[in-house]
Amino acid sequence: MTDQPNADAPQSADLSLIQRIIPHRYPFLLVDKVRDIYINKSCVGIKNITFNEPQFQGHFPGMPIFPGVMIIEAMAQTSGILVGLSMDLVDKNATVFFMGVDAVKFRRKVVPGDALELHVTALRGGGRVWKFAGRAMVDGELACEAEFMAMFDVPKKA
Image (cartoon, rainbow, N blue to C red; front, side, top):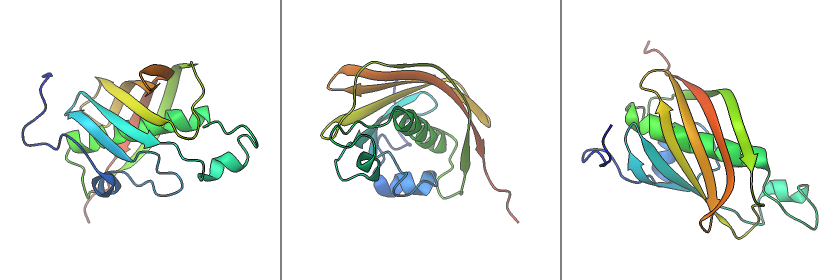
């Protein structure tokens, strides 16, 4: 794997491209954009945390904290975008399934107003099953880290 981006592949993904790769939609689409895409290797997703998101009605009233499981899901969605671009899955209606999450650690609260950077690195991949290391950062400070596995399923053509 090279440290340079593939010249033919996008080096960033806006919301429109993201929605052509992964099936998630509001209120569960947790990635606003992706940058620094290195095909088959890594990328950085961005999730802007805003107070008007539905989870803050109950997590927690008077002290809004972005749920840890949603941070992990945002990292997984970011990895799905990386795989979608790496395996040419744009507009292919691929589905992504979590297979495992390991070594999760939460280091700081994530709150409205934060820009969550989702750094994901492929540890193993190339086929249907991929393994990733993820780090969620806010202002250069580690908020969460985890390793996770996912399986990618592409519908067969009729």
